[in-house]
Image 1 (cartoon, rainbow, N blue to C red):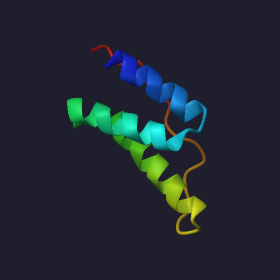
Image 2: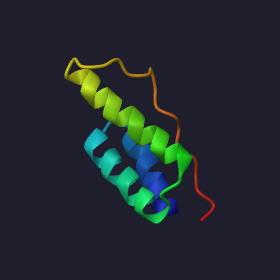
Image 3: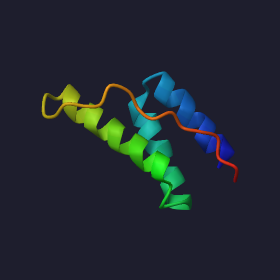
Length: 69
C-alpha cells in the first residue's frame, strides 16, 4: 500500500492522470473505503471531463498521504 500511495503522489504531482487513475483504482481494490483516494479519483475524473469542456474542476487535487498499512 505504501508503494501505491507513493506512486499516486508522484503521478498526481506530475499530472500523469491515466497512471494516477489506475493507481487509485488499485488502492480502492485493496481499501474500497479509502476516502482520500476516492476524492483524488473524483478530482482526476472531473479534470478529465473539464479538459473536454463539460464541467469545471477544483483547483487542485487533495494531496495523497502516506498510508500506515
